[in-house]
Image 1: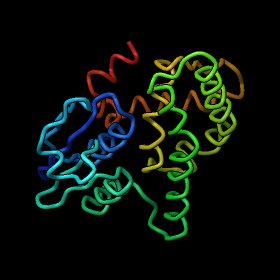
Image 2 (image 1 turned 90 degrees about the vertical axis):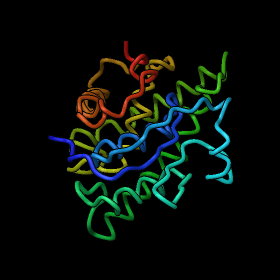
Image 3 (image 1 turned 120 degrees about the horizontal axis):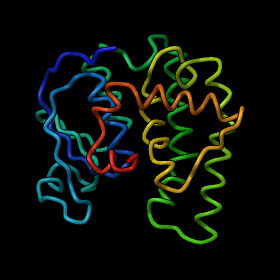
Length: 210
């Protein structure tokens, strides 16, 4: 599997530790887009960000006169702007299903990661870890049937899920060495070994797996 040849020039304002920023970096790497990567301290944002983005939020993707500031919009824009390799299915029903999976990740798992990243402690942190771990283990068997998330091919859904799974251990969540967890752990190994995934990692993210 080779990452596509470098093309285009964009600017991506990214939080090097943020899982939402990470998902778009994976798409950029998968597509082989030549991008100026600007790591931004969320506590010290450059003035230009507020000019580009009415919410002054991260991440923000700029392509000539276009500024995008919602990650799922960025991901689909990149998939349409650079159609190879495709990261959404061709057929409308399958595309809609992929979008629903992304929405479920956004509603079910992302808030739990956010609670832990934002410094929850004590009982709240333990309950959040337990809920996320049990929820992920509940879907683990699907990876026995297909190599990627509900798909034979790597898609935008995997781009959303990968950054969450990469952060588990750094957030105190260790998956058990059980038969139930084995397909999920094998999926994680496949995903993390992918050239585009490795290329997408910031220095801060690399330190999460030292």
